[in-house]
Length: 172
Image 1 (spheres, rainbow, N blue to C red):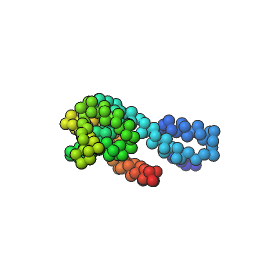
Image 2 (cartoon, rainbow, N blue to C red; image 1 turned 30 degrees about the vertical axis):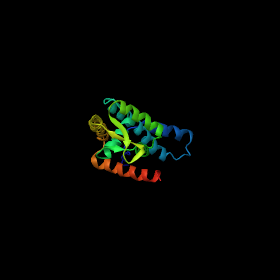
Image 3 (cartoon, helix red, strand yellow; image 1 turned 120 degrees about the horizontal axis):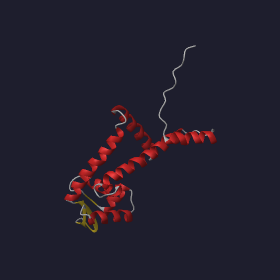
Image 4 (cartoon, rainbow, N blue to C red; image 1 turned 120 degrees about the vertical axis):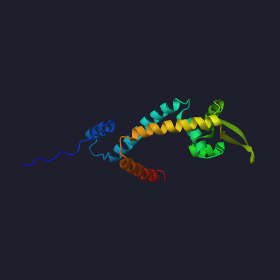
């Protein structure tokens, strides 16, 4: 009688342990979604921690990085209104004010009156803010690239495409 080849064994992760526990106590549950979203959640948390450490070397948090990066991505003159920043980052005005206060005290951005709306403000990256965000984004991308190096380019692109599909469906 010929021996069959055993199925490919994958290393176990903490999500596998959770799924096995559910299978023991509730074998009627289909935990396929839990396997996907549990891993996405744990990966997001782990990478969030790594990114926080990468940005801490520049004296900023992930939230502060997001403000500076949003201004940088807006292109020259790296200026947006607090409302535009809040909308892009999905923050309340109170949450945005706290971040802007800290970043302004650090000399990374400045707030000034909006010349087109006397009730409005503009938020602009300073030269120091531009220098810092360019360095910090490079450090963050290096950390993400290190983590992604576990996959070859084709598998990473496939994962990105699958996650895009899932994100588009869930953000409707």
